[in-house]
Image 1: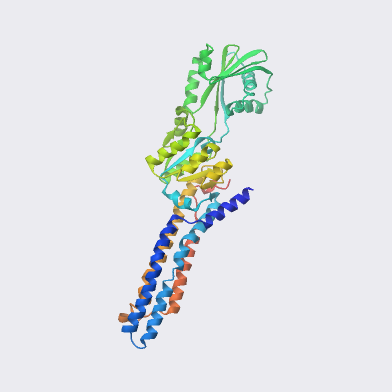
Image 2: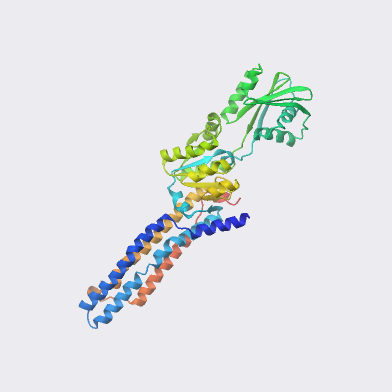
Length: 433
């Protein structure tokens, strides 16, 4: 079930190790022997140079050094932040499938996004239908929809759905024929109906110049026009478009505020893609890309910009999600995309991306604060525990106070990690749905 998948992903993220932990491990590898050596030196110095009873002073101060330097806080610094950070992400609808994504996301320089289903709804709708003189709108739509009812193409389905939603009954259609790369034709109620691109109309000997202004407007809006001819006469210009999700503009603005570039990878023609990019403020467009070409597009962007995060939702996005430094899958997309991704956005829109990146920056910042405190605190108090203040001030650190101070450092680290629970995402208002 979806709930079981969410639980599994959160558990995986909680138990995962970040690359920064490898650095902590290496430091700890040297820190512990160094502390043991410091304790031995403390014991020897007090035993040789300390006042009477020298053995008592030597033992107490050596034990204080061992206690104050106990690396509990170091061990807690990273995992506590990961647990709180990934838990806060889950509350926001951002599921980290792999822990390292939590660290890598903050270093992303460019966010590449698939268009269909990610920037857009992924479901084309009929947006424009302009009729030539002498034709009735409902009759033309009925005939065109009847022809397109035989096709499984998303554009055809959008035209049929528009007719059905308008309460228009589809007439009887016969002699259906698909002309590859051009369009479709059929006989509807005795009338010959042809639907296709402008090149199809030109092949039929029809001049589409009467719709030139409309076609230019549609192109500037990022829509690809189709034409319909009935009994050899140009009847209508039609446009079907995949509407942009209402949440997309705010998400792209938030990514820009985080200092990231946004690139769009799409199979659409360059003019349509540039129109959508201009509308949304997208920095770079890679258009007319075949599904298998998305991986190469990701590689090129990575080479020119640096670390890349890729956002997609479909089966054909899976290789690109795997190729990117961090792959983010829209949770409402296909299972293959979700399984190929490092991060899953349950909200079903792009707004989870800036939230995930901001959370990554906040979590890694929190881990660094914890590590700085843990190492700095321990290192600063080791000389005090060793008795460096005794000659000047007569002050020694009792093992009891050393134990209290050591525990306090762990409490501080835990308290600092828990601050992540109050993390406010850039687009908090829209993460609930």
